[in-house]
Length: 157
Image 1: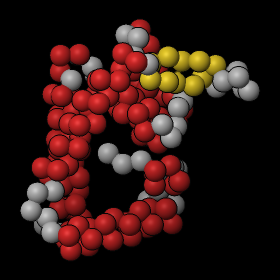
Image 2 (image 1 turned 90 degrees about the vertical axis):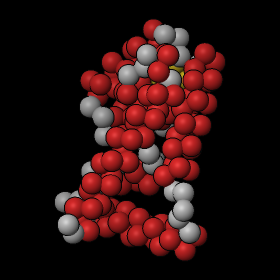
Image 3 (image 1 turned 45 degrees about the vertical axis):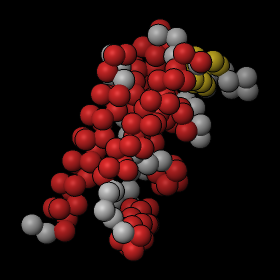
Image 4 (image 1 turned 60 degrees about the horizontal axis):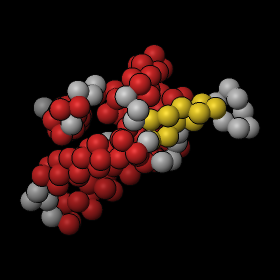
């Protein structure tokens, strides 16, 4: 198996595993994966619209809208019209979501701590160097990019 196959398999396994860890962390809340994604996205505070989530996370707008609607109904987020542009709806985490988001962030951190056990500083530095080069390659190659060059740099799992 070549590097590209190994990389694809590892990326898929990490994504699936971290999603499972996040769902387990908040299982009693009954959140969908998309609702979890929206909460974690808003927690970062960089972007705050459903359009941003759709573009940056690569989620279809219909799934983002459904997740946002459910989170609004649950009282976890609010959606308010932008004061300068009424077409824009800003999303904001509400206090009832704070403990849940803390659980999700802690679960994500724990997952990656466990994933990286036994990795030396030198290996981590080599990995970061490789990821930086891959990100640059994605941004420079129109066939590799997802039409989200700047935002992708800001977001990670």
